[in-house]
Length: 109
Length: 319
Image (cartoon, rainbow over all chains, first blue to last red; front, side, top):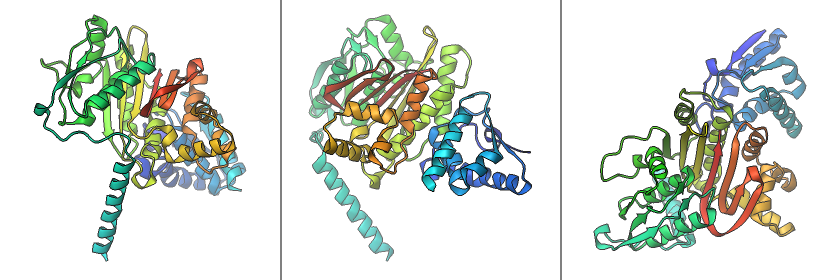
């Protein structure tokens, strides 16, 4: 099992969707941390636990760019099978993210 | 080649400036030194609040702009008996926009609560008082003419507001997300033209209300407002082609996340629907949106068309 804490490894104040919109964007998170870690988990056939706790909060655009972005690179099944989302602070977030993953994947097909 | 490109860019800029002047609805300020202009009084509404008294307060700001074209201004606030941070934020925006070109002074409200609220709100970080005023401990106004979304500013505001309201700095997840979405919306929509995307000024204000145990937020962008922005402007035209619907219905559809599916436009617009979901789930309390000719108290489902347009977008919410 691999772990990725957004607050500890990326930023405790995650920002907007794209790099051009501002710092700590979902796009940057996807490219620098989420995708490499996800590919590592895929290669090892293990789960990637993404810890959402400890941050100030998440804008929808950040989550969509990061997790929806991942679903545009891989299919939704692979993403949902490999990722485990952990959020004690905001328990509704994992379901919301799963929705973005499914929507992004459906729109991409 | 570089000189040619520079020349072409300068030409494009000049064309945009010219278009902006032509399209501008209000005539430019009279170019006179403030000392050469008369000082005229302007009464501030008793309930100085865009969220509670939108008609009078927006009309007040219209008069503010009209009068300051040719005059200095004296704001008469003695009779003000209710004041909220959205109106203070909008007032700061108007005064700051005048720069050194006009003199604006005024009186404090007689009501102690209102006077204290004004002084604690962060108003005097932007507007000089005759006598030194200590920095506000309950409120803070952040002003940016920024091309970027500043999540760290959002974090600082929330920490400040929560400390003022609860005594300790805390996280407010939905309020943080709302602030970031607002900044992002301003970046994407406020100027109304993609060529100058992201250069509008925005103001973000927080006030920790200890008595009500709430943190109040106001976000104001001084751009063209939701309905005249590029994305929603196009949607508005499409809506009106299909069936005449006023901006109230468009705003409702935007909040319900139905605009994209109805128009089939490939835009992302998940920001306002997510704010609405946070309201429905009780993660934020109270949500008021004022944009162009629409006033919407979303929490109470009070959507109104105003006869006075507000040139920009204001969001108010509590946490």
